[in-house]
Image 1 (spheres, one colour):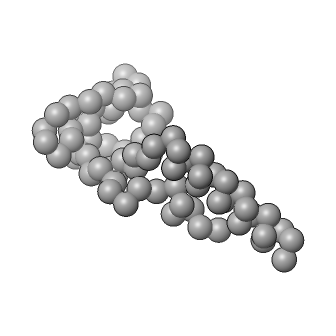
Image 2: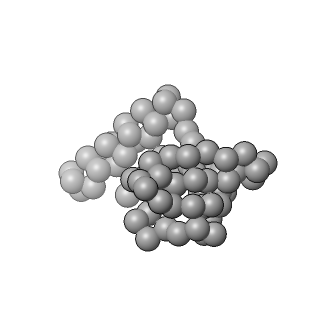
Image 3: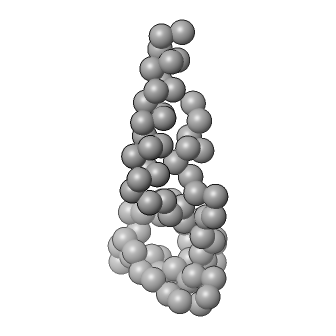
Length: 78
């Protein structure tokens, strides 16, 4: 199955500044900082590591899901 359908061609590389108290502080390439729930990052992530954020629009997400569903159906039927 092609899971790359749901990935962006421009992932955003961010550095983890801190993970504590259910939050993760991330530093963007332009040094802006954002805080997100730590449930959105891999469980063993720690400060100093890099993550790649994959931002896609709703239309691409819907199209990707449809393509994945069609691919799964083809696998089942063949």
